[in-house]
Length: 240
Ligand code: PMT
Image (cartoon, rainbow, N blue to C red):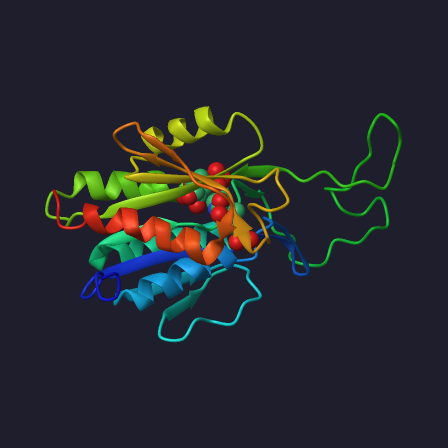
């Protein structure tokens, strides 16, 4: 039965969105509620796993019986993931990680009066009171995991599952991400639908397998999506 089929296994799950600070009061973030990742954490716990939930912003109560680690930025999430995967059997990245962060974090709150701050806009249209943020790339966590895991021959087998949030060309982008990020499974949600993706209680996903096959799942509660994902992870455990 499903209960106990992850007994003795260590599962690391990321959830929520990262928040990249602009100044002490503002950030750039992603629209994730944490529902998908927290559902995965509860499902893994119910199947008997030791669960480490690395969470960015999410307003949900922490699941009972799960080891919770809070992070804010993509870099903090990367550091936590790299630390906890060394003892893990499964990694699921359901967090919405900001791909970019402000190049500089202002030490003081950026004021909206013109002139003083070097980041305030003085364009060819005159001082329009705007603000230009220079953004730099954040690390790609799954790509760094691939480098660490694929290099370390003594590393135990780590089943890797990614998500893809797409608004167009979902199938092509998802297949690309599965290959680029060396994943066993990739769960693609169509975030252009109101009953799927960010914030909703339901999700409409496609599951891509490393062998190239794809499954088209119906809209269902995120709790059921979580169960469907672990149903596909369990057979991958213990294989090399
Ligand atoms: O939290 P909810 O409101 O329930 O919404 C759930 C969700 C829509 C956020 C979730 O189902 C989801 O799709 N999460 C991944 C969103 C995302 O960031 O997708 P992506 O296509 O940008 O990234 C692809 C994969 O690479 C993801 O597994 C992501 O975690 C990972 N990634 C992304 C950027 C980065 N710098 N490092 C990464 O490892």
